[in-house]
Length: 393
Image 1 (cartoon, rainbow, N blue to C red):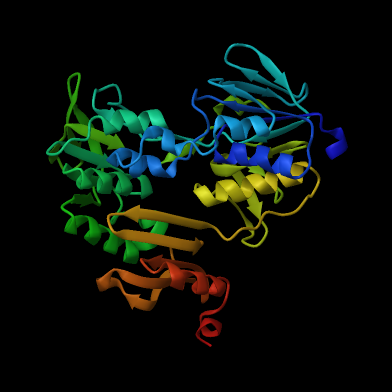
Image 2 (cartoon, rainbow, N blue to C red):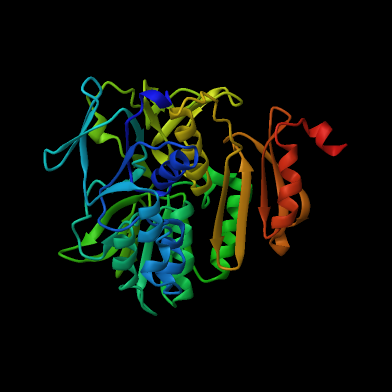
């Protein structure tokens, strides 16, 4: 494939997008590379936005992970502040919001995701989402001791923002229709420990109840729950998940279904690959299409997509990894966590908030999780895929 590549276009100036560029150069690609991003900022890292940026521990420029000199050395043509609005596979062009077009021989899609929004109420002052550095800075200016924050959504993002706000002395409520925080990611058993962690730090948890509406005229003043109860609010963070940023690909001919659908090599069409949060690819080991919204996957999948664009044609079969920091807790996990799996504590004690758990489905260990036990997690990772009996040997 390398001899047919003159110009590669990477849409999405994200961690995945920049890693694609770096990998192409490291693998010896000497052609033209254009990196397109809809934000005006230099590429930056997102995980600190809900933690260090919100608390003020970091200045905003610290999240920039490649400076201008590094990008110059990559000989990449940067198109920042440029929004892609269409893809023509036949003509091999990407169209932008200003009607300009960019031709390509190879394309990597790394546009990530966009936050979901409530059906109504987002026009009220004081209602926020958190995805970009601009979102984080706008929210940070409103986080003051004593103010009342309602977080709608108890996943990774909602729980991390709640923890950051409590550190700043705010009154915090978390609302979610599911029974415990982070149940989709960690299951009910560990989710109950997450709820306990937040309650011990003064967060008011309202799980198992839906939001009926946001209250307020021009500015949000409260959140009405399905029970009729009202939570007073000076600020509201809507953290109810995200959707892949694929609207610009509608009508392109690519298969879109909860992301850009790819084969096992991250290929969506001849010469077209996807990487990061937007990619839904066939995982040979798991025997299913999956999409992973985690930082480590963005880097690893970008390397795989770039390498395969250059002709490697190798399946991408990672063991998914994620982590979250909340208060003094670091929760790390490898593998997959089916909703109907059981959980076994194999080391430590949950009551002491220091333990390792195995997630078990059909008598096989599908995932391992560590709560404040990072060294032990590395050894337990080897048990993923084993039967419970083999893991005990």
